[in-house]
Length: 350
Ligand code: NAD
Ligand code: LMR
Image (cartoon, rainbow, N blue to C red; front, side, top):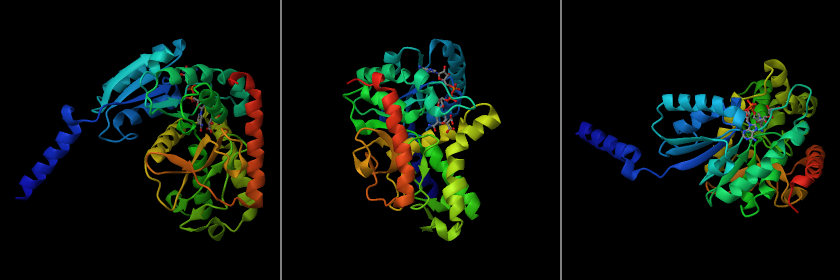
């Protein structure tokens, strides 16, 4: 009776997916800057189930500053109009305590993007202080299992500020986004090698999400082989490849008049997915996390490393040999992170 078996299976899936009594309890996801352009790309994908799973109900807490609340009301209307089966509730607020109440995942996007001609660290004066209040509100209100991803720039140092202002939340819960740089680097290598993005593994970004970041082409693999097998042009790898990845954000601003949004939202989604899923044994991904002292990086500095997850906890991949060239590039980015930390010393509780 194939129909009977199929019908039984469908009824089981329905029962465990849609019957309120057997559904998982909602995951609370807070997103700051929810009326901005990244928010607009990100929110429907979270509400659809794509990020946290198609069996995971979501309660959204959308945070904006007062001037953004009218636009946010429109975003909420659109989310409602999608009639997402997994979207349990939406709270739109400019109150940080309300916005982070019970949050399991806090995606800190809200902040001012740079304009043409600026470096991301030029935003520290205007954006850095935002992350004091957000860190403190997360500390006061979030769920005990909270995880945080900082997207707003300069994301490494903003993450450091938030983390230091939330001392009771373990350092391994704090992340800043360098996945977009990884994806950009993969795309550039694939184009040069004449292969597909998916053929490239172990491409890690080291250091800061800035024009000093180091995309490590020496440990990356194409179809399991060293990149040099497919791209013997070492001068390109050391030169234009690195420069183009470092400058890609600026190139997008020059072209669009606005900073990247769809690709940034996509990278945020992939970051969360990579942290929540078991990393395949032959790969790793880029996330800026609090250093544990590995690779000589000052403990607690938010620095991008190759990261692997076991599905519940992520850790820095140890023992990667950066080589002389890579070490020198990484050091430049580390120096910049230390400079940024010094620039915000008054925002970091002693
Ligand atoms: P946007 O200007 O379109 O939206 C930002 C939103 O944040 C606005 O709606 C604004 O009202 C809101 N906001 C400002 N201050 C806030 C605060 N204190 N609390 C809550 N909300 C606040 O900008 P966007 O394009 O969405 O970019 C957002 C940030 O993400 C920028 O800092 C940008 O540079 C950064 N970014 C980072 C990456 C990355 O790879 N890490 C990639 C792209 C963009
Ligand atoms: C990006 O990399 O696209 C973002 O960080 C935005 C920017 O300022 O470059």
